[in-house]
Length: 369
Image 1 (cartoon, helix red, strand yellow):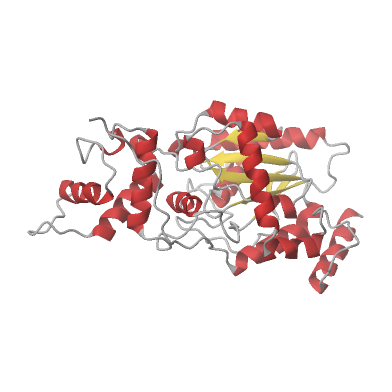
Image 2 (cartoon, helix red, strand yellow):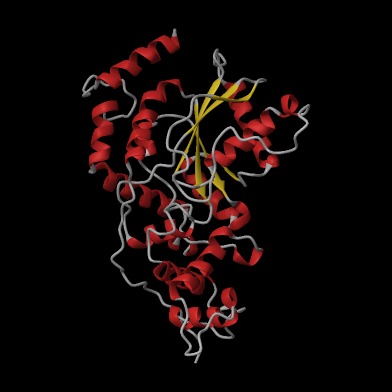
């Protein structure tokens, strides 16, 4: 009898929110800085391009020109023609990148420079970028690489070969907690950027979205039970390839049972006890970590269920429209509307302005003088 992968994943009672105080603070800061921003770079993880899209950004940075950057291309198996299909329906610029790759950074600098020279007149104080995205999608790493490339001539005379960091990076989400002061990426043309904290949604729409986010590292490793993460990973891998080839180093046949797979992983690693027992949590964490880090080509993956099912551009557009309506009813969205107005541009008179909002109104007026 041929193997039939599961079509439905159990609806485990896992938390659907990981929204923290510094996320709200960052969203408020985005709105305050918006009048000064000429271009937005939104970074999404190419292993979960749907789940790592945060529709709240459209509220606080309304009408801003945007380039979508799909990061971690070295870890993903997404098809480029699928991204092309999506963006034909939205008319957004996009790029498929590795945040650490200097060649990709150079292409981004070239595209941003092109945008600069298309502006009439060019921004007198330089083109100001804001890099935004969900937690741990590679924003700060990208800022460091862009700085290296944009300032290559200034850094060439340095004796040290060590990569200089202008933004802190780390393997877990939440390393960046504050929006940075302006960082200069290039002098000719003059390009400046704000590095920002990753911002989570107040709640995600379902447990599968949260599991996809956990598999790409948008939430801390301890946030969701590693066995549930491992089970969801097995579920996705079987949907992607029902032959079991994605874990054939441990088993000679496909399986829907995570216990069976974990037992075989522990056995292969020589970690079974005399009675056949093993550390279930540790084994699950180890296996999930291999796919999160993707240090070997065989661990490249795709963790969005919708992407595996290959949604087309019109379906994706409808999905995001429904997501915007869902998020619109949340308290966070209400606060954004109170501060920036219904259109998100801070031009409406029907707004509830705080003292901080009025302070930034004055700063933005002086910025434009």
